[in-house]
Image (cartoon, rainbow, N blue to C red; front, side, top):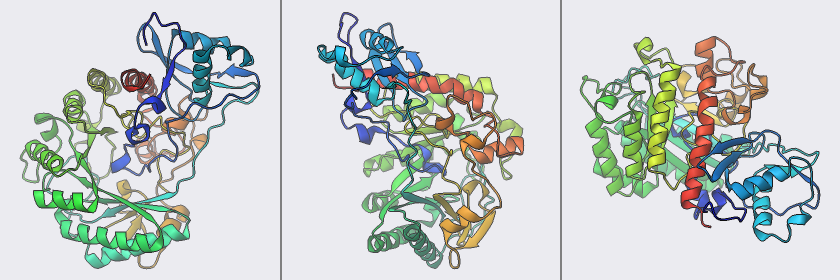
Length: 489
């Protein structure tokens, strides 16, 4: 699109080739399930009724000619428009019929995009967010409590205890039974720890068993290994490729920035080992997702690790430090709000410099995302189950020691949904400070565990609220830039 172009032009994610494959859901290392909705919205037909501009639209100028638009009261997705399409939107500040646009094909096409993104709606009938029901049960399988790193922010009290094959199979049996009983059509397993690759033989046996059980039960199976990237050798990398197991690697910086918060048990650096593992995985045909945990120790050094990922076309996500009973030197890990914003801005600058084909709407906002509206920040207490190395059930991996049953005697989904103890993952409408917030359906009040640690309450907004409100419009702008670069026009 050029400034001399008088046509009304609007571009969305659906205009990018391979659109659905380019939506990245970041919550590989957390309880967030893949979104039930999609930010890819095909331009819809226009109703034969008067339309009006949506009341609250976030407008983010991208350059002198283009503006990125997002409706927080809608169903997700960003639309980028040129001046003519923006002027078209403003024509609907009061209700008017679409018929007069029929003679202008570009205006009608732009209007269809505006309507499909809930930026225009029938007069008297504002957008109604659609909260998709999850069809996937996600389970964190704690295959070992052992680890070869000593990260100061880790929430696990380590030991050498690992999950046995029998316990693993009992866990899978319980998950499959529970998924079928509770109406799920898919099961996603997160092989975690500790460092899950240290119990690789059990992990691979468990995955084959899970595949057979899911096939027999009519469930779709997917899986990811959550790893620190230190001990994945070429044999395991090849096996992961063969089994179709995805990989998430934790990389908190480049060189010293990573080593400062992810040293080995012996106190040595680990960054070079992680980079070596990423190379091995790429050689084996596995493109790992990079998880970046941000604390005060690395908040000013996340730009380089973002650049590292983008140069290799690797997806990544940001995770803000969460206080917990096992973390050491908490005062040294807690970040200041302005420092976090400065660090994120440096990361966003790297993204803008090297825009990926894939959308960042679901991966750079901590637990938030702009892909589809939701009423809870994650799946805790609903479609997410944690099983430790002994087969004990917990609601959240951040509170893995707070068990509520055993897989040999308890329905895991029923247990997490009905047990009144521990973490409470409330609806966003039940949180003070969230009910009337523009972004309430996109952060959903933030991580319940982090909020409780900071406030002693579950029914209030996240302590990161100001950070979220600042960076969400920046993510909208980045998506607009991506659409300008990659959308077919």
